[in-house]
Image 1 (cartoon, rainbow, N blue to C red):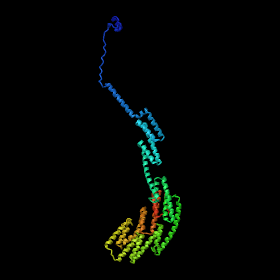
Image 2 (cartoon, helix red, strand yellow):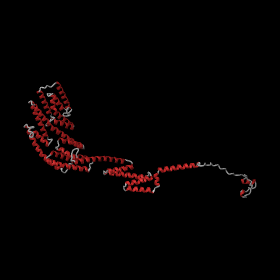
Image 3 (cartoon, one colour):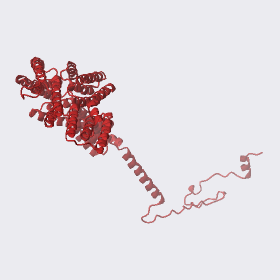
Image 4 (cartoon, rainbow, N blue to C red):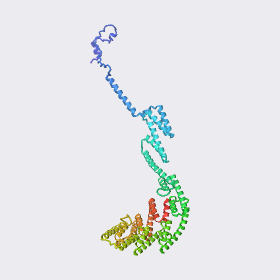
Length: 542
């Protein structure tokens, strides 16, 4: 098969390529034997014309894109303002932060806070400034804690106020605020106690519940380390020692003993206390010898019938003299009761003799000595019955019936241990009312005379049950119903022993307040008991 070149050469002579009009500029295009064509330029699509004042579609899209980009940048800057502030620091901000840090390091918290606040005003809620303010708040909290530890409560309160303004709160801040409130309340109480103690000391009111010693002790209980309270107690102790010495000098042993006991309770290690106790013991021995002689003399006078006469040389006046020296002297109290019994016996004799006026006078004298004696009440009922018989005044059925009802009520009162109280409805008063209606009522008279033994039995029962307060009240009834009875001393000793046992038990259990109360009860029964004094010293020393 012939090649393409061969095909071309065989079709005719070879035609050389030409450039056309470029070979002969300005001449007509030559004829080259090739087909001719004319290339026309492609017509351009007409572009829409923008109206006057309106962007094109492309420009509108660009503007939207730019606006979105700007908004994103603004949001980014707003969210990361601190970071941008770090990227773009200002000399003024750096200067304020440096000054604030320097002031904080030197402990000038007010100055540091001022610098940080200025920095925050320049940069807004800048993290650097806020961090500095938090550091100042922490330093203020530490300053408040230090002031609180040294009892500078006003400084602590001011520092806490600044810390709360900067920190806003926190567990440590709230805890310290609570402790400060508690201490301020105690401070107000301490101030009130100190004021009352100083006022009492100024007017010489040393002991008792409204005395300076009481208030200083309360102040010391609130604040054991209070030097003011200790100094106040020292002043009270010195004043008590001075008064006790004056009482010893005047022979007023009763008052001296009271003051020395108070001094021992207040300050067991007071320097003057041993000297005062020694002086008191010496004078008490001399006084006891005098009292013993007076008691013997009073008994002799009573045995010779001089119960109340002559007025200044009688058994009664002698016993009263003893009680003026020693108010709780058991022998003198029993002697007074024997004088009352002697008067009652004389009244019985006058009643039997028909001298009712003399009998009534003697019973009135006895009533001034032992007003609630069961024997006295029985003697009065006997006198009333004798007068009724003498005047031939019969007792009617209504009076007997009413007297019987009163006796039943009295027995119920005895069952409830209402021997002498409440007045009017106690067994003693009910029996007397029954005898006033029917002086011949044997049940009323027997019930009245049995009241002392009933009161004694009830006291022992309460003692065995451990109800010591109730036993003490019943013992008082027994003493009044049977003055001078030998059973009174035995019961009183039993009750004192029970209170001392309870005091020791409370001490073993660590309940010192209860132990003090128990010792006070025992001291009331027997002030001079050595066991009581030992416990008082032990409690005061603890």
